[in-house]
Length: 164
Image (cartoon, rainbow, N blue to C red; front, side):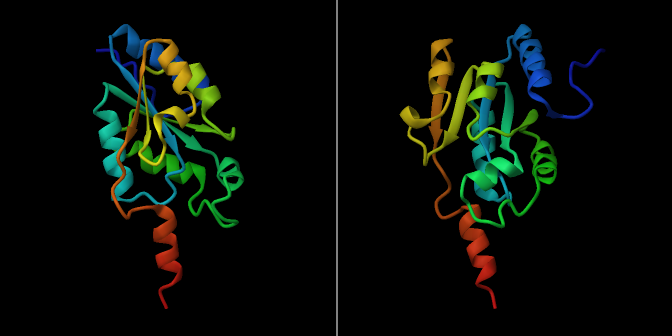
């Protein structure tokens, strides 16, 4: 049986868009989310599993190292480089593909992929989620998923730094 899956699931935007089209031919509903995912923790995993459960395939847009630095998370962030962060994400069973993007927002990537479902963490109200208009315009759905209380990479980094 021929597999449509590429040998690696860390893809460029063009390859990801082709893969999304192939999935759609099989009537798979494609979910997209994005983030930094610097130090993966239980909150990330719960969120990604919940996002994946909204459809058949989950594509994660991953902020490049340069875009993370522009987000103002700190001069030393990300702690893990984009290749390492992407490798950890694709190791999760619920993640079907990862696309690293260099722009400040994933709008260009969302426009290229045209996902059926867009999901972000609950700290983002639906009306503020980048790309929501693109997804809704094609008949898709946008979700703001609840976060696991008290879990964030920033808080984890602060805790590690304060251990003496």
